[in-house]
Image (cartoon, rainbow, N blue to C red; front, side, top):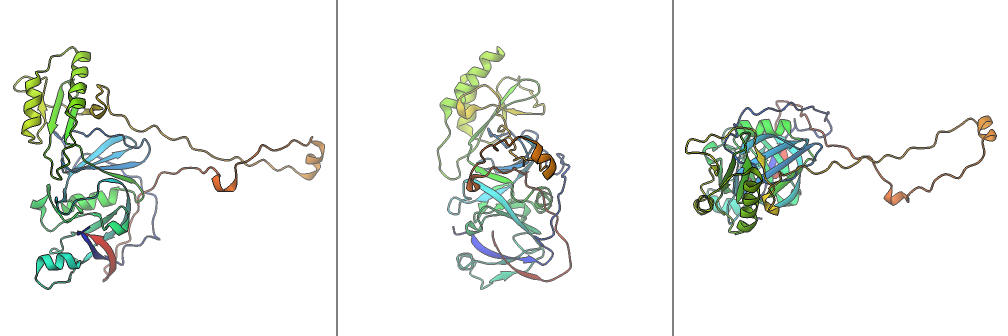
Length: 336
């Protein structure tokens, strides 16, 4: 990927000094009113990040519920953000950007590094996204007007206050899904149906209009409402990204909260979080004193699974807290 480059981390980024952090989340810095929710299935326990490329939004779910929405800038068509499943990795505060050769050539100014500070394109924090070999990251910016947009060399760019809040909230190890949904279909608190359609920055042409219209038709039948097909077609043709009410009058207002329909499957039911996986633990037999053991009949122990397939107790990744010091920087790989 062209976006691969190197930043540097400050010494106050210390992976050995992590503690469990209970994040209390609220919708504050970015109101997501009129922002439709994608058709996704977040994990039922822990945090799950979804980044919808056409929508230029990052959605943070906690325990299966939406807790935050941020506007983001994503990779351009020539330097696309990698779609698929990733993990949230390490965090670096006040990063120094070591400019990759491809971008040095693009810039043509001879600059090879940019120190931490207001002129750094990575902003005040960088959060690793996926395999370090990809060079992906979620970071701040020195150009807030570029967010939202399709502008980066592959990284996910946030306004710096949002990037700091996100870095403090998200747990390293949490799943992060980069998706490509060109539409959103939501029911609001007043049982009205809202549709938004987005442009196709990567030319995927993957909008399944048949499934979308099937979902709309089933929902209308269940709710006893009539939806004009030409209204749906107009939204899909215009692709403005704005949510349009399919069942309201002219002055219809969206009432929160929203629920996404599982339209990708052509269903009128709601999108659901993944079922929680049961925790598996092995109970060791209780040892008895030799005198008692001699009095008990000998019973064979149940067979245990082989060591290489031993069940383990699953755990939810915890957030990290960093130690802040006024120190110089040292090298760290990252994206822009």
